[in-house]
Image (cartoon, rainbow, N blue to C red; front, side):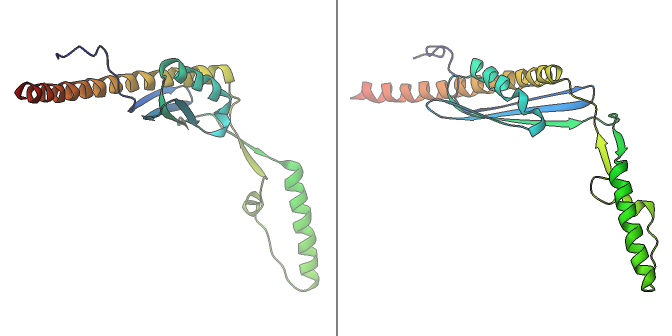
Length: 183
C-alpha cells in the first residue's frame, strides 16, 4: 500500500478556533469534536445571542457529518463602546421619601443620619447601564463569519490528523504484509 491509497482521510476528532474584531465587540468561536456515530452538535453561547444558535448549528451540520461537536462562543465588548447610564427617577424618589421617613422617625428618638447621594446609587435598579441596541441580523452574520473561520481551522486539523492516521495504518499494513510473506 502506498500513501494516497485511502483518498482523503479526515479524523473525526479535532479543534478549531476563529476570532475577529468588529466595531463594538470581539467574537471568538471554538469548536471541539470527538468520535460519535451520529452528528451531535451543541452550541454554548451567551444568552443574549441565543437567537443565532439554530443558524450556527445548521452551518456546522453543512460541514460536519459525524461526531460530537461542541461549539463555544465568546463575545466581549470592545473598549470605548458607547454605554449610557440612566437614573430610574421614580425609584430614586421613592427611596428618598422612604429614607426621609426613616430620618423623621430617627430624629424623634434622637438619632440622626445624613445619606449622601452615592448611598442612593447603591440601591438596586436606581442606576441602569444601557448598551446600544443590537442589530440581530448583523450580529448573526458576524457570528457566522467567525464560525466559518473556526470551521476552516477545524477542517485543516482534521485533515492533518487523518493523514497521520492513514500513514500509521499504512505502516501497520506493511508490517502485517511482511509478516504474512514470511509464513
